[in-house]
Image (cartoon, rainbow, N blue to C red; front, top):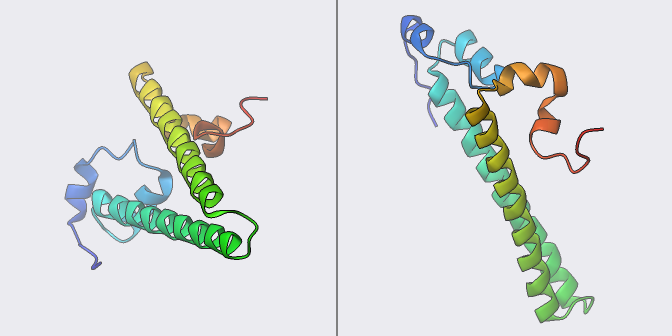
Length: 126
C-alpha cells in the first residue's frame, strides 16, 4: 500500500482525539492523513488475526492427523474457539459503545487504567 501525503493544514483540521496516540504520532510525523494511517494499522491487525486463525487451524489438523483428536473433535474445537473469539469481540464492541454513549474519551482514560484493561482483560478490575 503506497503512502498518501496530505498537506499538514488538512491534518490539523481532523478530529484525531479518538485515535490511539501512535496513529496520531505517525500521521503527524510523516505528514499523512490519519485515516490512511489507521487503515494500515487496521489491515495489519486483520492480516495478523487471519494468520493466527490459520495457524491454529493447522495445529488442530495436525492433532487430528496424529490421532490426538477425532475429526469431529477437531471441528468442534475449532467451532468453540471461533465462538469464544466472537464473544470477546462482542464484549469489546459493547464496551466501546458504552464508552461512546457515556461520553468517555478512551484515549485519555488509557493513561490511567491502560489500554489492556479497557479492551477485554479476562481479569476484570483488581
